Image (cartoon, rainbow, N blue to C red; front, side, top):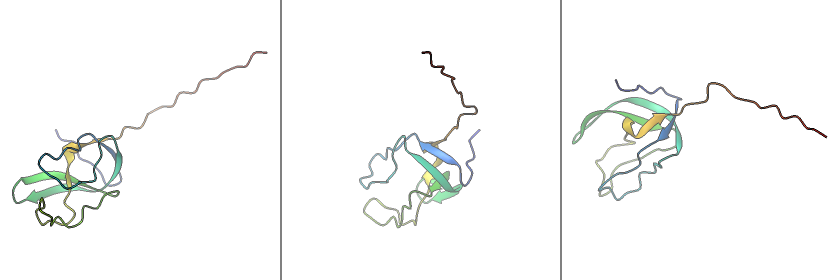
Length: 98
């Protein structure tokens, strides 16, 4: 089963490698991002995939030598994992002794 991301959900990048692409895709492994779009996208070469657009990155027009002519193309969802917040916080009481 594939995880379905939600708009506003925090994610962390787990794969920022784009073999064969020279243009910086602005994605950084280990960096946290916020989902602004999640859904299927059809690419004329790669077919249909589930992708994410991020509030922190607007990919703009993809018209350079490596580009495919798309506007703000989503990243493939496999590049991300949900950012898991701790369910509980632990506090430790420290007593001073004189």
